Length: 410
Image 1 (cartoon, rainbow, N blue to C red):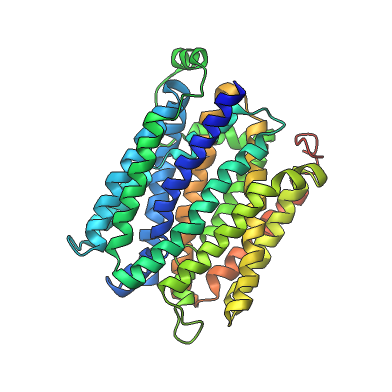
Image 2 (tube, one colour):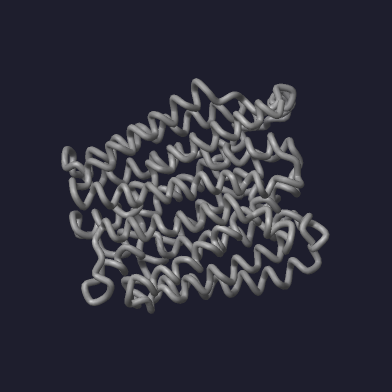
C-alpha cells in the first residue's frame, strides 16, 4: 500500500507538472498578444484572461462531484484531453493560421471547462493522506504547480520572443497530450470502490452552479472561514494576472520584453516551489497552520504593494520574493485546513466547491485588475490587491482565534 501511494503521488505530481508546464507557457503570451496583435484595451485583456477561470467556476463543482461518484482517474483523463483540444485551437490563433479573437475566447473558455484537474488532484491527496499530514500532501501538489510555473513562463517567453507566438502554443499541445497519456496508462484509481458505490446511491443530480452547496460550505463554521480566506487570497493575487506584463513592458518603466517577463514569472514559481515543496512541514510543526497562514497573508500583501514602485530588476526580484514566499505559504496551509475539516465522503465535492470559488476569484481578479489599470493607472491593480490582503488578514486574526482548536498546529 505504501508503495502504491508513493507511485500515485509520483504520477499525479508528474501529470500536474507537465500539464501546468503547458499552461504556464501561455501566461506571458496572452496579455502581450492581445495588446500588440489584437490591440485590445486593458479591460478587454482582463476579460479574456479571466474567462478561463469563469468557466472553471461554473463547471468545477460538477467535476468535483463526479470524481466522488466515478473516481478521480476518469475526471483527470477527461480534463487533460480537453486541454489538448483547447490548446490546439489557441495555437491556430496565435500562429496566425486562423486569427480570430472569437476563436481565442472560445478556446480559453473550453480550457476552463475541462481544467478540472486541480480539484481532482486535491481529492487524490485526500484519498492517500491522513488529516495530520494533509497539508504536506497539498504542498507536494502545490510544488508541482509551482514547478510548472517555473519552467512554463520562461519557456513561453523565450520561444515567443525568438520564434513567434505559435511555437510555444503547439508545444503546450504536446505537453498536455503527454500528461493525458501518462494519466491513462500509469495512474491508478485512488478512491475506494465502496465509497463510489455509496456516493452513486446518494447522488441526487448535478447542478451547474451549486448555489446550495456554496451556501452550505460557507455556512459551515469550521470550513467556511477558510474558504472565504482562500477566495480573497486568490482574488488579490489574480489582480496582477492580466496586468503584470503590461506594467513590466511600459516604455517609461522597466521596459521589459516577453522573455524578461517570462523569466520574472518563472522566478515567482521557483520561490513558490521551494516554499511549498520543502518548508511547509517546518512552518506547520514550529509555528502552526493558522499562524503560518496569517504570516503568508501579510507577506503577500507587502509583496503586492511593493511591485508598482520597483524601477530596477534587483528591486523587483526582492518584491517578487516576498510575494511568492507569502503565496507559497498561505495556499497549502488554507487548503490543508479546509480538507482536515471535511469528511472523506465529501472531499471531492467540498474541495470542488472551494476550487470553483477560487476560479471565480481568478476571473474577478483579472477583470478588476484590467479595469482599474485602464481607469486609474498602472499602480492600481497592485495597490488594490494589497488592500484586500490587509482586509483578509484582519479577518483571519479575528475569526481564527475562536477556531484555534480546529487546526493541528495550534
